[in-house]
Length: 354
Ligand SMILES: Nc1ncnc2c1ncn2[C@@H]1O[C@H](COP(=O)(O)OP(=O)(O)OP(=O)(O)O)[C@@H](O)[C@H]1O
Ligand SMILES: [Mg+2]
Image 1: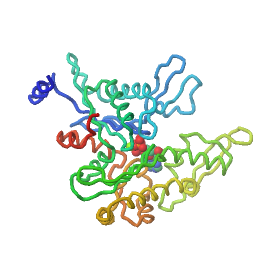
Image 2: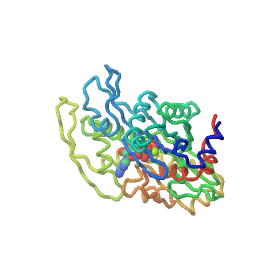
Image 3: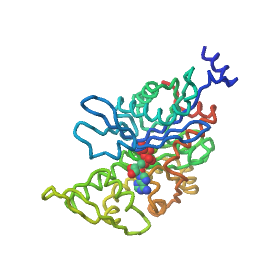
Image 4: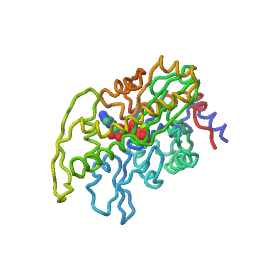
């Protein structure tokens, strides 16, 4: 039966066509792309639930915008933590809505027969079999008829323009919202990998603690993220921004002026974990690999790769050239899209079914 349908697909009969949908379900942002069309959605991985009626009512940007401002009966959930699904039902609700917004509209002309959707999704290298299974379950639940899971470092490398099948090792650092993934890829696989579960989101929390201790005010998560994005830079620019939070002394609003130097000081120890991770990765790699890595340098991807001057900062500390990939936030989804155009590579590089 399967072969029969596959052979019909070759004739491009619309009724039997399978459409490839690429999904990067990140801790901070969800990215969805359609083969031959490109990226169709990029939204925060946040969902709002009415705790009385158990209904999911806010999705993506709208849920993130109201974080910290909702009445008690509305809870904002982040269904992906450290790159893996932590709330199954919330993730199903969120992905269902995202697919309706971005993918289902694209297939709205298929009124008689539902198109077969095949998922090509990234999964962290550190995800356990159970976590991989949970992702597959979510994908089936939202309507996919088959799934391919690709380890994130492989997708990142392809998206950053690396020829994954060459026997030239590449070191990649993806700094996202929930994970820092350090990997060396070569010859169609991952030679070595280190994951640090202390990425962009943790930086927001660390900054909140710092401001609390130094200035005696309590700031919300979103404010801390804005401060980090606006103030953090490694170009030596000392910008400043005045924020209002809740005073520790009397609970009343209090304004303080936060500077880039504060943010750097607060986040230095978190960021230095990346140096330690890279050093550890290099230590466990064979000497030939290390030699080539020093020659080729490091490619940086993920949201934190947008921090101005981070390439030079890492490069100075590690004594290796560091290059930021173009559109670093989209490296994973771009890699999955490229794979969707090459079925043989997709089969070779995806995680074998358990
Ligand atoms: N210009 C910037 N400066 C500092 N941080 C930034 C900037 N742009 C994005 N970020 C941070 O990058 C993180 C999001 O990155 P990204 O979209 O790559 O994460 P993700 O793919 O959802 O997470 P993960 O891959 O870890 O599961 C957030 O913490 C966000 O605050
Ligand atoms: Mg990511």
